[in-house]
Each structure stands twice: as structure tokens, then as C-alpha cells.
Length: 411
Length: 160
Image (cartoon, rainbow over all chains, first blue to last red):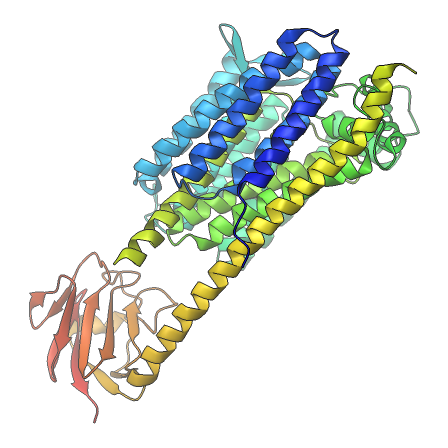
């Protein structure tokens, strides 16, 4: 059998970074700062990858695939606006630190499954803080300013929510709380969260949280009527939302026919479709297209920009990379024997997968558009850091399992 | 057309190639990983089959001892068990599932190996008692041993 070549993908990653940043260097009047920043990011990726491989910290491919996705994202952001790109690289640096911090904390603490109350309390506290001190951006009141940094608490709440659900689904929390069966408690907490998110008008997160809930019930819950009841509730809430909320009516209307009001409401999605169409197979090349016409191109619509400048093959490659990432995450989840870790792994993978599906489906007009970030690719500090944190948890889960397997072999 | 845009459009082909090469190299690595794991699993499976084949011909009976608590528990008068091992607990996936609040999800297991019957506690909350003494890990079983767990009691008897 051929020996596993762990270096080849790393070399390709380096090649991609070198060529990409030379191109950005040319586009920005040969400012040396660009090269330094690019070099910094490349070294960061290599450092994380080599630490993971050399110290045998679990699955080797998760970070490798995520690094490639981030490289594509950062090159696109640097081409759109060099300042945003540089800021994104700073966030990736912070994300790398958070990755190892989460890994260490999750790996060493073994009583996560007993703290469901803490997760709910933290989640609700974050919601209340957002409602009181929050700042409104693009119609959603979901930002908090702390000095120089602004962040979205809803991204952190998603992880806490998955950890809360896992407490119940791993059967480590079976005692009724205030005479309410845990199964109903998960439902109550979910609907309270959705109420808070509705007050914040953060529709994208509602969709993610509720889909995670439905999928987790589908995977774990033995009482089948609970699943159907929740699906029915979702349909009813969606219909009521469509009937009474102007915002949702606009989104669905634009999805059905963006050309009806192309200069105003349908402008964003129409520009996105134009961008995807004009790319061709191999794309126009970084800097040759005009993705600036799409509003919010650096966060929600980055996939359209990638399709325009890197072509349909580039866009498909991004999707394949995401597929590989989710495949590895599910593999880690399936291999785990600890029930709590299994549930957390499944929940976090679902979170990534649903977010990717919702936003890529949205910008290609496959489903109605809701604004959320594409994990690892879009610009956004909280998004990058929280994605890194989730990846750190999955990495820790795979490392725990690996360590156990190694001990079993020695005995 | 400026020099930059020419270079950039040429590089777009290079980028696509690099990304796909990257994807293929990662898939190749994952594929090799799976092949290795598949071999290991097959070996383990073969081992466990060999074990089961020897112990599958041995049977024993767990007879339930009648007491007051039995009125609200669904339990048979006796269970015939196989030497390849049975798990007794509250979970529906257990070989002998007893839905009683003092029985843990997976309470204890009984199996046969090389001439002896064994009993092992599976980390139950209320413990498993063999002839009145709480068992820590694994004990051998003799005929007419009394196994108490969560207020219920079995008598173990080997079948010839």
C-alpha cells in the first residue's frame, strides 16, 4: 500500500496562498504589507496543521479543509476590499487561538453533560443583554458593542443550544424539571429562543435553530408524534409569518419572481444571479469581474462573487470542500462512543451543514434568501471565531476517541 | 486589457487546478484511512465471532425470586440466557429489559467463557449484589447464586 502523504495537501495550500497573495499584491500597487499579512495567515494554517498532525490531536482533515475554505474566502475578500481582508485575517488569527482554547477546555472537562441548566441560563442572559444593549444592523437587533469590538451573541447561543439539546438526547438528563418532562423542556426552551430571535428580527438564526431542533428530534426522539407536532408548528408559524410579516412576504415574493421588481426589492438576488452566470466555467479571474454590484457581497453573497471570479468549477469546489468537511464531522460523530459527545458532534455538524445549505441555496435562488454567514468563507468576526470554536469541539471529540483507541491497543 | 487582468485570468485556471488537486489529495488520504479502519474492524469481528462460537452452546436460567415489589414490574418467572452474553437493564435495547425505577439503563451482564459463567456490573447506580455482597467488577457464578439488583432478585442455574 502507498504511504499516506500528509504533506501534499499542505503544499497545495501553500501554493494557493502564495499565488493568490502575489495577485492581491499586484492589484494593490505592490504594497509589501499585503505580502506580510498573507504570509502571516499561511504560517498560521501550517502551524495549526502541523501541531495537529505531530501531537496526534485527533482528526487531521477538518482543519486542512477549513483552511482551504478560508484561503478562498480571504483571497476573495482581499480582492473586494483590502481593509476587510486584512481584518478577516486578524479574526482568523484570533480564531486559531480560540480553536486551541476550546479544544483544551472541552478535552479536559468531563462533566459537560450535567450542566444543561447553565447552557439555558447563559443563552437567555445573552438574549436579554442583546435586547437591552443591542445595536440594530440591517434591520436585525443582534449586535453588541464592547469597546472596540462588536459581536453577534446569537452565534454563541447556537453552540450553547446544541450543548443543551445534547444533555437530553444523551440520556444524561432524565429527571423532570418543575414536573416538566425533559422532552417538553427542550421544546419550551426552543420556542422561547425563537421568541427572543423574533424580537431581534434575526430570521436566519431562527431557521438554523429550528432546523437543528427538528433534525435532532428526528435522530434521537423515540416519540414520533413530537416530531410531527413540531413540524406542524413550524408550518403554522411559517404561514402566519408569511401572512402578517411584510419582510417575509418580500423575501418569498423575490424568490418566486426576482424580475418583477428588479431595480428595488429583487436587485440583490438578480445581481447575484448575473454574477454567477457571467463567471463561466473557470471564472473571469480575481479582480476582473464586478461583484461590487451585489449589496452585502462580503458576507452573505460571497458565494456569488466566488462563482463569478473563480467560475462554476470554483463554486462547485467550495461545495465539495464543505461536503468533505461535513463528511469528516459525521465520521467523527459516528466513531464516538460517549453519548454526549456524539450528540454534540451531530448537532454542531448539523449547524454547519444547515447554515451552508441555507445561504448557498439562498444566493442561488434555490430557497428563499435569509441572511446568514457562510461558515469559514464569509467576512465576520463572530462567525469565524465561533466556527473555529465549533471545529475545536469536534476536534476534541475525535481526539478523545483516538486516545481511547490507542489505550485499548496498548492493553 | 492590462497586464494584471491577463495574469489574473490565466491564474484562474491555475487556481481551479490547485483546488481540485487539493480535494483529490484529501480524498486519497481519507480513502486510505478508511481502508485501514476496515481491515481492523474485520479482524475484530472475526475475533468476536470466534469467541461467540465457543460459548453459544451453553445456556443458563435466571429464575425470578418472588417478592412484594414484583406486583408493579413486568417481569417473567424465568429467563433462559445464552452463553454469548446478555445485558440486563432498563433500556429497551437490553437483552432482558426490566422497566423498574431502581434498575439502571444498563445494569449488569452475564456471560460464559472457557468453562465458567461470569457476572459483571455495568456501572449501575444502585449496584449489583451476588449472595448479598456488592460486586465491583467481575465475579464468577456458581449454581444457585442469588443476584440482587434494584430490589429485584434472580437465582442463577446452569443448564446441562
